[in-house]
Structures are given as structure tokens and as C-alpha cells.
Length: 433
Image (tube, rainbow, N blue to C red; front, side, top):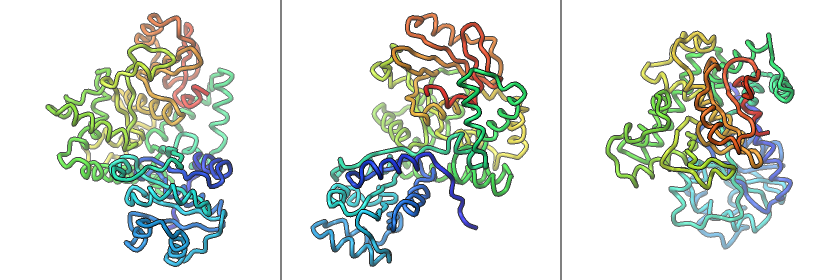
């Protein structure tokens, strides 16, 4: 069966890089494993160049990797690559892809000289956590742009469903602050589908091909096990993996932040900081920090000792939340889809809000805060009603001089209540635009 190719927004960013830089820099696409980096860059290479060579350093031969040990003769390197991959490269019309470049540090270092040579374009892909572990003894090229590929956002998910009309329509309602009225129920059902399936390409493909949530869950569990294996390679004690697997349980509690010592027990502080940094660099998670003095320069007052951890993909988060079962039964997914599960799902929606805000380019500060000009826009997340919004009220009273607009994101239709904009969760991506 032919692999499905999904439309991704980062394609346009690559197109911009190609035309603006015209070979003056390489571009490195970072992201979690299985998020679609390799598929995206190969599709881009096929469409935008006359020819390309894709070097997958997960399986490249020693003959290939050895070419980057000595860069004195570029002609020889390019001749060998064309011979090995049976591809004719054309000056300024071809691209060479270094896929999983972290597995060949010398190739990463060679980017500086390859770019300066100027004959071809260069795209790299890799997992940041592995890249950092494999760059201790090499010179990091300055001729390199970096971008992040996240799991498919809601609009990309709707594209995959064959729907290119919904998001522009929702944006129009948002811009005019109009409720959807009778259309809200269907909009929420569509959004809950995204919440359950998530944005990992394998899970989306499984849903499209089978329309079976058990198969979707199986695909997501496969991705999570890949992450577990990666964490085990970095930390054989299993503590790094434990931190990741406990994200749903920590977020579902009433704690206002993640408590790593409650998960791991006694652990050296320096070692804990290393674990947390590895977890953040893996791009499988999103960290939201506390700001000791909220203002438009929140990064200056970020308290790294107080944080929440979210899954970068809420679909994976849902599977983690039900990890104790052999598979997440269809009945659970159907009840979640139809909003019939009795469990308080506030923490699931909170994870989704974090994912959507981060994907839109926002730095995360809980519970959440967006900066707009010289003002702040505080956000509170509710999974159902809106009659109480204590944390939002307390914050706005304390920092009234810098609060611009207040949002409560929930599952009901758009409305306003005493100066608070009550926003349906599916409109979250439009915040900050």
C-alpha cells in the first residue's frame, strides 16, 4: 500500500528558505521521532528540484559516511555520491538531504564547507536530543537555519480529512466574535476527533484507512514505544522514561505544577536537570514555566524550578492516559468522541491548549499567558462550564494594569461574560494572530 503524503505548513517555510537563501545556508528540520520530517523533505526535494540524493544515516554504508572525514576534494565526494545513489546532480538545481544527521556528526560539521562550495542545496533532519549528544567534538555550522516540525496541527488534520473549508470559516467567526450557534455541536465533534487521533502521521493514516480507533491506538502505542526505546538509550535506569510516562497522571492532579521528585523519589538535582533538559530537547514534550513577575518580557522572570510538562501530541497523551490497558478499547474512544465519558477531561483539554499555543509559535507560561504589545492576555481552560473562573479573576485583579483581554477557553460556543471572552477550544489557534 502506497504511503499517504500529508500536506504540511512547513513546506512553505522550506520554499521560502530555498528562494531567499539560494544556497547560502542549509536548513535543519528538528522534531520528535515519527513526526514526518523525512517524508516532508523528500516530497519537497521531488517537487522543487531537478534531482536529489537522500542519505539516511540510520542505514548509510561506511563507504558513504567515510566520505565526510576528508573534505579536501569536493569533486571526489560528489562523484562518489552520484555513483553510489545512481543520481545525476545538477549545479544549483539539486539538493542533498542528510536524514537523521545526528548519526553522522562529521556530515553535520561538513555543512559549512558544502554550503560554501555552493553547488547544491542541503537539508538536514534530526532529533535535537540525539544531535546534542553527538556534537561534542565537532564544530556546529553557522551556515545553518533551524526550524521545528510539530505534530500535525488542527488545520493540517482537517486537510488530511479532505476538509479545507472549516478552519477559514472558523477564523471568520472568530474575527467577528460571532457564535456558531447550531454549527457548534458539529464543530466540537470534529475537534474531539482531532483530540483523540492526534497529529502523528501514522495515527492519522490509521484512522483514514481503517476508521477504527483500536487501530489508531495501536499506531500511537507504536510511536510511544519508539520514544521509550530512545529514552532507555539515554538513561538505562528508566528514570527519563518514567518522567515521560507520568505526564498524564501529574497533569490530572490538582497540583499547579509537575513534581518530579514525587515521580522519581530521591535523585541528584544535577541529574534531574539533565533528565528534564533531555525530555524538553526530545521534542516529545512541551514545558510551560512559571513567571515570577508576569509582564511582556516573561522570559526574563521565568522560574525554571516551577513548570508543567505536556505531551507535544494530545493524541499520544490520550493513549498514555489509558496505558494500563492492553489497548484503549473502542468504547472509550467512542465515549470521548461523543463527550459521554464521566471522567473529568480538563487535563486533556489543557494539554491540547498547550499544544496549539506552542505550535502557533508561543512560549508557554502557565496557566496560560500570551503577550501582546505592552499588555498580557491571560487564559483559563475549562472542560465544561464557565460560571467560575477563580484563577483568571485573581490574576486579572492582581495585574489589572497590564491585562488587555481575558480568555476562558472551554467546550461551549463563543460568547462574552463580564469582560471575559469565552472561546470554544477549536478557536485557540487564532489567539495571538
